[in-house]
Length: 368
Image 1 (cartoon, rainbow, N blue to C red):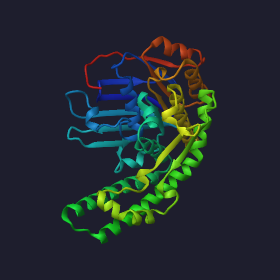
Image 2: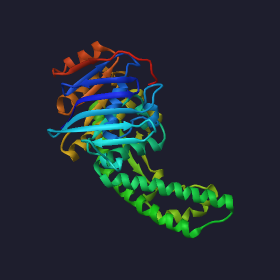
Image 3: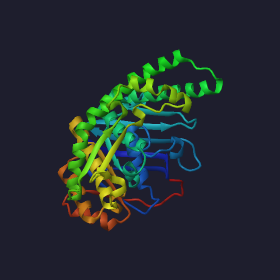
Image 4: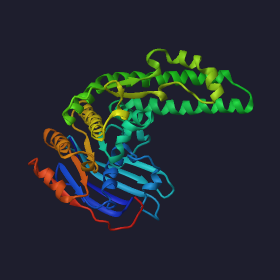
């Protein structure tokens, strides 16, 4: 089991300096919008992934008007105490330390302290483009398979080089076929590894999502989820050969695992076009709970669970189902935020479990 004992924030978001000590497995945090609830959860996420949960540069996480930040926490895993430290220097250089020893590659830390974050805007996983769904799947697999992240990093680097070559060829009217062949070989190697890992993982993961959906929604909405990849019906090598002329014309790589997607249907129609708000929310939580369960089974202990402002996203029945599952049926540490003290307190009291209640007040004016 992972349990955060304390965290110290220095110049992080709206916190000039603040220390929190956590005394319970369930930590309930309430306060007005802008008080720093999401920022606190994101600091916890930072220590698990070496980066923010949200898509923005590290420099934007610094207290307004200052440069650099520091996040430090004491965390137990399987009863062993660890010290995690993330530092962004004034010159923009980031360091990440485990028990005082700096990582040479941040990717080595991913998966050591598994974490699941559920935020208000996560419904984009369902409603927006394929890149968000790929990132969601990749984040889970990277925590399960240490080498997977390296394949992703290498694939993106080679893809960028290939696209640059295609663009330069058009500008200079000179095409280096030998260099393109070399890049294709490297792209194929990493792309095939990514495809295989995604395919194997999703065969096990997607049925879990469907089961979780029915638990939360309490309804049978004929939901179906499937993995789409161009590599399912043709080899990556053949795909690149077939599309080489087209890639040259468009000056970018139009085929590969960077086009993969998670397809979601309801009654054989596109889910995002048919589903109600409640159905979308239920599917989002089903995806996240399936992620939670897969990580727990693989690691042999539950991951850290961060629930940000989820009361605004679910009706009371679905909310109670979710809280009972993650707070009562599971034994992992849960951080949950809300703007309403009474609603948060009453919901947890109804579960008849001990919890810590923390109030946050807007003490500083800062960009969040």
